[in-house]
Length: 285
Image (tube, rainbow, N blue to C red):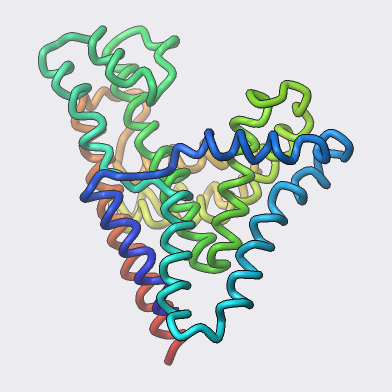
């Protein structure tokens, strides 16, 4: 259990303070899919999903079984857990990524600000600065949820097997049709699986937002919408975050709402680390 907590701390520290992440998995994923392509093309989307996930799980299992009596087994498990988590989450500080965007807004240069976040949000529907600022605030909440908290949740409860399964499902959903356009059914199935993976973590993140922000309003939203369908996972994350930030959709809070969202994410990470620590201590005791 201590290995899980240490690996989480190592991964978060390196990614956040050294600003390094291997979260861009498209290259190895593309090679992996092409290697399995001859078998994937012969089965339905459910079996294809098993074919994509099972080999990685088998590798992890064999390594654990073969090396479990090795003198440095604990160091190996720490290294493997940290490495898998490093490829599965991206905890780099968004303040660094968004700094050019904030600078452009200070200079009242909306076009440059849009260019600075073109890879972060869809700017095609942005018509004014207010819409741009609101879109960035929502993207901060969604980015942190999908790239940090869901992976941590499945890693905490199911280790490398849980976080690797979620990461693969997400990669399949986002990229499989780019590799082979005939895998539309697999992408649709992966999208449903991703919503299943994210439904419960979304609730935990929503209540975490409430703890880190406006508690009464955040909790009220989470309780009122707790049983929303799996198709509304991302909507739940965004709106619970906005409620915890005490932001009304019709009001204009300027760029400060994005700064507030970034600060709230930092507090939620601390809350999760504290909760994980006490959960693991309770299990050990």
